[in-house]
Image 1 (cartoon, rainbow, N blue to C red):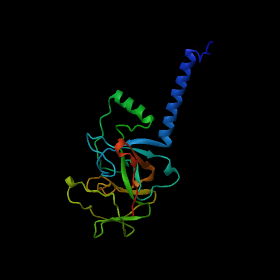
Image 2: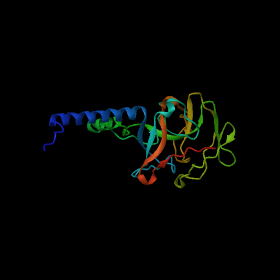
Image 3: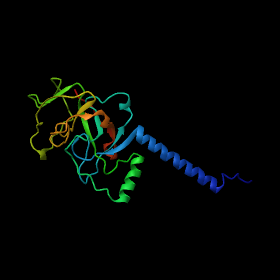
Image 4: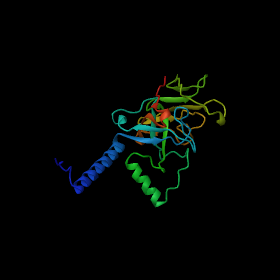
Length: 226
């Protein structure tokens, strides 16, 4: 009893190439409009998100779709492109002038892998357009619209000095912008830095939803702010 051939080798190769092409296109569309992976570049979001030089840094899933329907809310952890107006930098970007490195980085970016030379940052939204933010009250808490907020995620790295937040006068956040700060309050370049300030919504890439790597830290990213 003879079996029916599945298909000629050229046809199987063509099917395989078609499947690979569809997979790549799907990955590109997914990265551009739905979600992408982002590696935590520094310790400014400790201990919510782990990142340091030479460490196994957290990789988080960034939702690029939610903010197409509504804006960021206080407590959200967001990834954004560093605004052109910002003069401070948390990290020195690597040299990617090598054509091979630049090419591989660009290919990776198409399928959702963060480019090595991207100036993206990740912080927590403290206040949105129309709100007024200041620091601090008698208990060292940030105030929004004159009301002290509880932030259980705030951390002070012991190697960077006293466990106190730097004070700043009330700032009214313009409409269409957000005020962001790192959870590691004494080791973060954010809206408090001189000449920086709020982040335009047009620079926001998406909301950090999940820690996906390393597997031991897999879980939802807390956005609680009271």
